[in-house]
Length: 194
Image 1 (tube, rainbow, N blue to C red):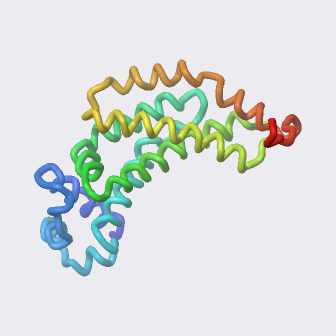
Image 2 (image 1 turned 90 degrees about the vertical axis):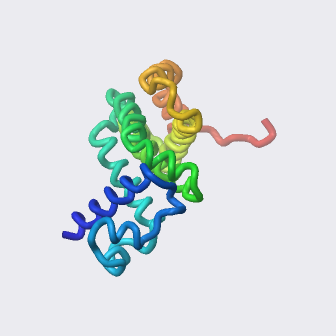
């Protein structure tokens, strides 16, 4: 029952965001729309921003599914674009509000989950530290999210498939190359004077 209530609150918020901005929506509005008390809302979420974060994480889980491998990362990244398009009023409204940081955190988490899956897959059999794998995934995460945020800022006009195809051309083979460079059996100490 708890999950059903959370989903109802999510749908209510997304419905309302089609008509007004996030800063104009109150907990009372959402509770009334769902036919629940404000206390029921507070049982599940501490405030509207907590609900926004939960919505983002739920959408992230649905968007990626099992598309976290080297052979499917392009499809996974395209599904991130599609999830943003599907939730356009929600994303645009939250992005343009004081909760912009939540959209960025949502995209960072979503993209990191995708990329770390690829990094882990490509690192099998290589002696690469967890810290270095995380560093590689973080590097690509920031590039991917930068492209997504720029696309959102430009009202999502560019075809996501073209963005993903160009990105694929740019990074094809580079994750494996980066992992190879970070192999602990190959790394030498970096001299800061070099």
